[in-house]
Length: 333
Image 1 (spheres, one colour):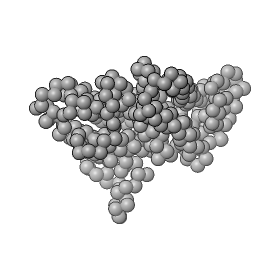
Image 2 (spheres, one colour):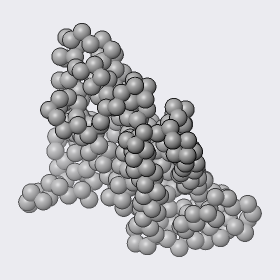
Image 3 (cartoon, one colour):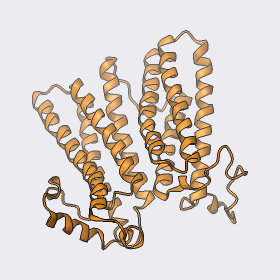
Image 4 (cartoon, rainbow, N blue to C red):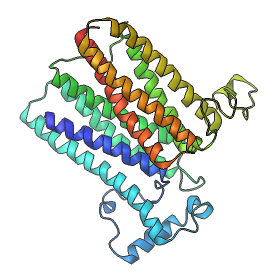
């Protein structure tokens, strides 16, 4: 059971990483059909490749942007999306088959059983959301809806976080509930909520390619607030279709998370909870790495490698934060 959880977490990390690269390389619309079973096998001859390419030529992304690409260039973006979908199918099987075995052997308590069944439903939902997202870019838009992308990414992080939490309970032989509405660990709970908001805003930035504007830091072209925004009412402040505002929110939410993390770390440093503080140090170093990579993404005009590392580091950052939260609950700091 332990190794199964480890494998699932590794596969989900890989899935999120490949999904990020699929978006960054604009590969997500290269496969225009659902093909749940037929799509398991990639094109094996030139006729099949030509068929997939001809389907791609019918969508706005090709007509308006990529009408000069060759078949060989199309194969590159096809394989990114193909790998992403293949990983999704593989995760579904790797989850389902051992899960059925564990149920048959009756080795799971009711709480864990319900948790894992809920995760499986989320995995099924994730597949549907993925196709719902792709559909948004096949008719009128040149890319997928950033709102649907945010839902897709958020569910992935919920699944990952849930599995990580079950694993930590197993390792530390505890039964801690993640949804604990007491006043304990208020700052940590706030940080987790802010991180998930940041994931959503980050998906907006990625979906809108908002990282390609205002490529300066710490100011946005010599201004704290983007100067191309005309605020007429309070509704304009929450215009998540605005590239400038989305980047502004992403920057400032990072600042809030950074200083709130310091606010939690100072009293922790003064305490004698060394094990908890060690978890905090890992988290804070990853947070610094994430901030540094985010700045590099801006200064390099959304460089593919820095943008990818920025997305991947967010995975390990949220895991480290969950580890800190769980360890704090165990040690009762």
